[in-house]
Image 1 (tube, one colour):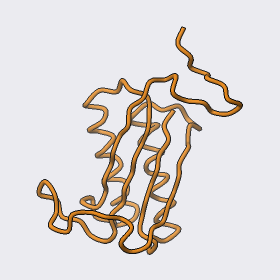
Image 2: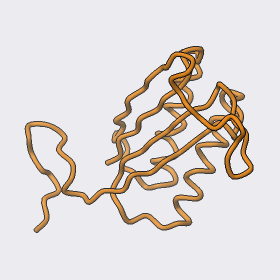
Image 3: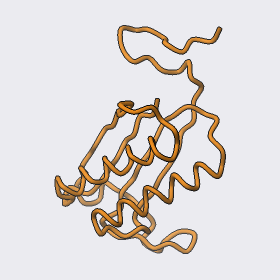
Image 4: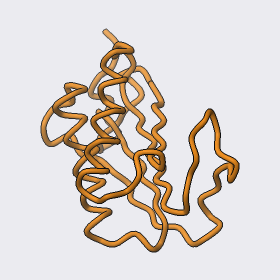
Length: 129
């Protein structure tokens, strides 16, 4: 039950944004065992200066104005190994499909309990028993 927020530069083409979106979704399904059709995403383009990153780099990684921020809220419980494979699948997939640098792919996971979701009607489909 993930919700992905993907933020890119306003200069990102529609094709590249679509490829980023699809890559994230495919990694969720194939690597993180998210159910098919569970695709909820917020795609945002930002003007120059609205995507802030350290110009000197961070942890040995340098960034460019083509930076892509991906924040995913999903259920807690996946192993560190699954998360590593997930990060790699996204970075490799976006690079292969768009040519964007892997260094410019920032991914953040926000883990929540299953009962923290409502998919409409004010219902809590995964209420604790």
